[in-house]
Amino acid sequence: MVASPPSGAWRRSAAAASLILALALGAAALLLTAAAAAGPWTVLQPIPLPKADHTTVWQLVGNPLAPQSLVAATSDGVWRSDDDGHSWNATSITGLTWSVAFSASGQALYAGTARSGIYRSTDGGQNWKRENTGLHSLDVRAITAGPTAVVLGTQKGVYVSGDGMAWQQAGLGTLSISSVAIVADTPLGVVAGSDQLNQSNNLFSNLAAGTSLGWQALAGGDPAGAPVFSVATGPVVVGGSVPPLLVGSLKGLYSSSDGGATWQVQTLAGGAVWSVNAIAFDPDNPQVIYVGGDNGGSSGGGLERTTNGGSSWAVFKQGLPVTDVTGLEALSTSPLTVLAAVWDPLSRQGATARALDTSAPPPVPLRSVSGTPISVAVSPTPAPTATPGHHHRTVAKPISIPAWAVLGAGLALILLLILALTYLRRRRRRLDAEAPP
Image (cartoon, rainbow, N blue to C red):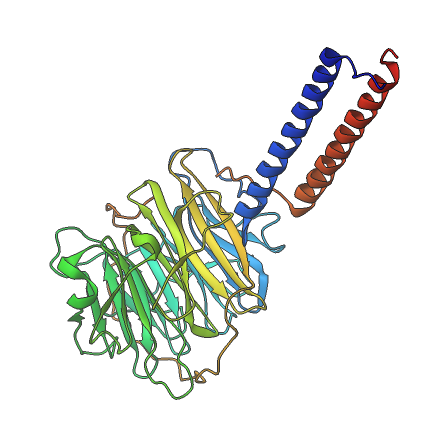
């Protein structure tokens, strides 16, 4: 007759093993959740900004000629990285900087500051020179560059230039322009958005900017004059003539496929409603678009992607340290690189992140783009002065789990589980052997 082991000892052993097993499984579940949350996004090394209120990264861009070279516009000047965001270096631009942008060729880099006007660099941001000739407002809030022109949005209207060194006032001088986009190269067509409050219209187009042709309000893309925070155009496919146009505002996201003549409201995934601060098109496929926003400075923003030109949207924020997005850019790499600047409303700090979008559709044939830089007429004017004003833009210590750490922790948990089961089995055998006959 085989006797049963002492029930008390066996139950204690079983309980201990069960506890170890439960802890192992729980930890494994947490790590799997963290790995899943990491998603496509990798948090970059924090920019060493002063830990002051509203320390913000407004924009993060990459050099189209060297995608590992990144440049950030922050509340503490311009910072640059030559190693894909693993380390950051301060530049000679130290004041509040709203925007940075590379030229279409990637040879020139521009930075728009709040008090010192526009800066230009020809060595990727290592050295800078102020280029304010003809510029009457030193508060430069937005920059876009095409093959024939560079366009600025300032506290006092729109300015255009053919070489980024001499500027001509192009209208809307009574408005603070928060965003600009080029919709045509010859003649120069521009769409501009203002984020001023109590306006009947905040979105305008001019299909011959820099000439006597006036600006036209685009009411369909800006219902009831909602403050506009972002305007973007995508590439034009072979056979096409008009770039897709997207506008983000306090009231959501609107699109146009005919240069702003007609508009469609874009319904984001889950009916998300937030201020759309940033829009980025895939430079090789206009069907792939990223949009990001916030919830008026509090938590509740997000980042979404479409791969069909806006017919449907899906959440694309897995792995971001926070979900309030202040800036986006997509780079022509394989796989597609997406850069994001984000803001944490709790810590009041900014951060940056990079995604390699391996699930994005491939490039499509695009219309070639070229043209002769425009010429500007610079008239004698008083010396420019900085214009203080309220900007309706939502002004991290991120945590990232490296893949090797997740793998190592997972292997350790598997080993722990094996040890627990081995202990339980040996304990049972020992108790069986020690049982009285």
